[in-house]
Every structure is written in structure tokens, then in C-alpha cells.
Length: 382
Image 1 (cartoon, rainbow, N blue to C red):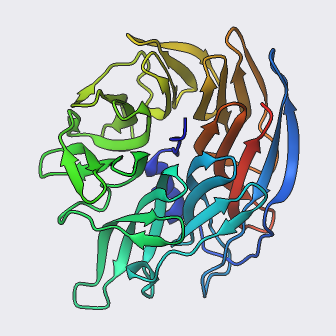
Image 2: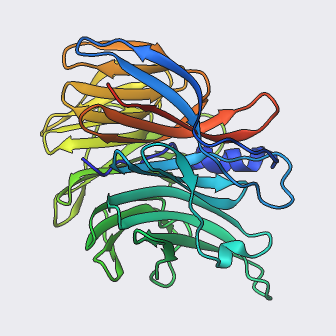
Image 3: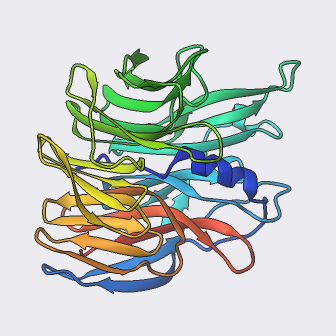
């Protein structure tokens, strides 16, 4: 399964960007911050934490550099995306080290523009798509303009993709690529009366918007997309009532069967943070209250509770990982075990897997000097 690329709630990401100050720091490539042995009934997985390199933008004194999405094309070709204090960040794992790969010069390079990549997916070394959004300094009377972003990597370089006109800047937040002529990007849109879930399909030359059943008068967040194939795709998120007191959360989940999107129901209403589809009869999701849910082909059921659960990575029906703030949980097909999350990574925003035994979680590490830098938690023998 090559398509894995998720991250935590976009509302949380946006709030974090507003709260945190910008900064300066250099990070060594692929430096190992620590390792932990996670026991399971089948085998032991050794997890290690690495800090991918990044370049600090001019004028930044303290970097805020999270990785929001990650996708594994092969064991020697893994992509992670995020930002460095408003500058898009793309990182590539070659099998031995992480390296930053520059995007082409464009609107995000304009002075005081604020751009971020929130999702990435690749189905081949020469077919990788990254999506996100930007607040662009137009350097004209229009001032700052909000816009969605999409880039394609052809094996040699990134290039901007042409998008339909009038898309809201939140339209492309997560992406799943299944072939050079079939990929999906999801996000949110707004009308005068409702917030909707947007889904756009890439056919190799153009993006086309496809109707979805999600429309609400409450605030909507789309948090993840994952599919076992182009005709078995899940998208999850949440709604929340307006205001700050007594807010009501509701889980959102929809499924694509190859011809249309339909809304499903789940037995947890705290909001869904992540999903990973292994097959039409086996998919997993995590909820904001720590619930871990499983789809068996006909219904979703709660399987366990994992404190601080944020991301799920499924290698097989008997090899399921749940990454959290406090611990890493593992399901071996019959029982769950947990171990503390290794030091060197503080929040997880994305997950990727390659069977057998390769899993990655992408996120952020809070350093003692105030720097917030890219971090990847990975295993190679789980």
C-alpha cells in the first residue's frame, strides 16, 4: 500500500501558526535523537527519531517547522511536507538520509507571503503530488490573496499545477494518488449558508470537482484521506458548533466507491483525526477522544482507547500502529500493547506505511531553545 498521508486537524494547525513566534536554527540531516523497542507478540519494532534538515527563511529568528504530511513511495523514496515559518517545506528520504528539495520560484516566494503544504502522496518516483494553501502578497492593490496550492514532482523537480478558478484556499488540504491519471484532493469550501466538503479528482491533466454529501452550518474540518484503491477511499473530519462554550463536536466520515461519495456513520462523535484503509473490509480510524475504530466491510466499531491518539498506520490486519502524544500503540491481530512515545518528537501530523514492517510518523519536535523543528518517527523492522 503506497498511499498514506495524513495529519492532525487543520484547525489545530492554523491556531498553532497564529500562537507561535517565528525563529532561526540549523538542523543536521538525519540525526538520530533516540530509539525505543516496542514489544509485540509477533516481533519487536525499533523506532528511531530523525530531524530532517531545513533552511531558515531570511529574517526568522526562531523557526516553526512542522511536517504535516508524509507518503512512502518505496523504502528509498519517502516524501514529507510542511512549512518553515510560512515557507513551504518538502523533504525526501533516499533510504539513507533526508534532504530538502526546493519548490519552483513563484507566488510563495513573494515577500511576506505565507504558504504551507499540508498533504502529499506519491504512487511512483516520478508521480508525487503535494497540496496546501497560501496567503500571497500580490504586491498590488489586491493586497494579500488567499489561494490553494498544488505541486507535482516528476522525478526531477517540482512544478506548480494548474487549478480550477474560484477554488477556496482551503480546497486542497489532503491528497491521495493512485496512478498518474487518478488522484484525489479534499478540503473544505464555504457558501453563504453552509460549509461543505470539497473533493477534486485529477485525471492526469486537469482537476475536476466532484459532489460530496457533506454540508453543514457548523464549522467543518477535513482531517485525512486514505484509500486501499481508487474505488475504496475514506475521508474523515469533524464539525463543531460555533462559540467557545458548550461546543458540540460531531464526527464526519465519507466513502468513495469508484462512482460517488456517500456519508457513513461511526459510533464515536468526538471528531475523527485520521484514517487508514487497508482493504474494502479492513480500515482503521482514530478519534479525538482516543478511540481507535475498525471498519469490517459493513460497520465501524470501537476497538480500544489510546491516550492522545492522533495517527494510525496499518501494515496488515495483524500489524496496526497508533501514534499519539503520550504513547505508541500496537495491535498484533489479537491484543493491544503500548509504549511511551520516544523522546525527540512531540506531536504527530501524518503517517505512512510500506508492508512489511516499514512505518513513518511525521510531526514536530520542540527544542529546549524554543525552536520547533521537523521530526520523523520511523521503524524498519516492525
